[in-house]
Length: 155
Image (cartoon, rainbow, N blue to C red; front, side):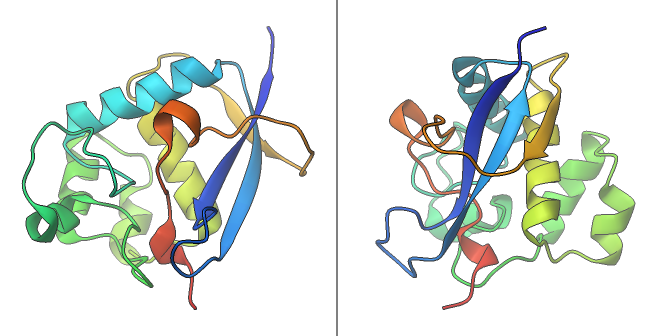
């Protein structure tokens, strides 16, 4: 089975806000295109998202209401909302008990949740985090040029 390396960037890699970010190197059995497509499909399926600058849910709720359905997209907001927790429970997220007990995400929690979420629309997805390397494609760039985990960082 071919394993593909790619970065998942968290925070503000474009430096148009707080400028803090991490590039998490991941190895997966799926292609970059499959992962990007599955992320968008999972947004549409669950009506929640990990980004704020594009709407992949198809709901068009408006920014204020939509923030209840987003994960770590606002400045210094790393807490899962009750709405998001309800959706995660509805989709049998294996980490729901932990997140209900401690709804604040760190980078590692965010990554685990993000990959589980993508896997909802990509059966057989396998991934693991690796040490950083150069010249590896970034998941949230190109036709998925959105910020994930912006709320995980302080100024």
